[in-house]
Image (cartoon, rainbow, N blue to C red; front, side):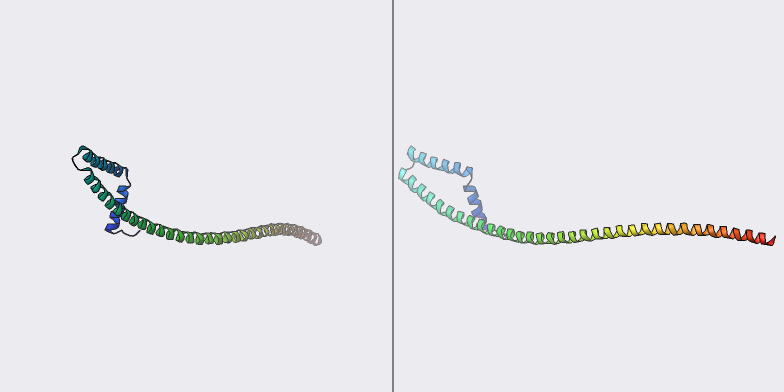
Length: 164
């Protein structure tokens, strides 16, 4: 918000003061006092009406000017707020687009993670099969070793028999 000039500050203060309950009480007391002066005979009734009419007319002129100044100030403030709202609206639209793009990226990442999980599961299954194959090969090697040891013992026995 921009700074107001002294006259604008005065206009705002006057319209704020005139629109208060204290102003209504003050004006009522002034009018009652004026009419009491006329009815008590202290001042001529025509003179009271002349002075009151002049004062009220001048007050009305200045109040209308101050009120219009206040309206102008308020209109400027509303325009500034409207511009701010438009800028915020543009920012919100931009943020919304970013969120949509991020959502799409998250979906893509989710799909890639699912694919990687499937690949990991496949690799795990392959590893289990390979481990089974290794276990079977180890079992076959162990059996072959036993057979070799048995054959070795048989050969030794045959050698011993043939030496005898």
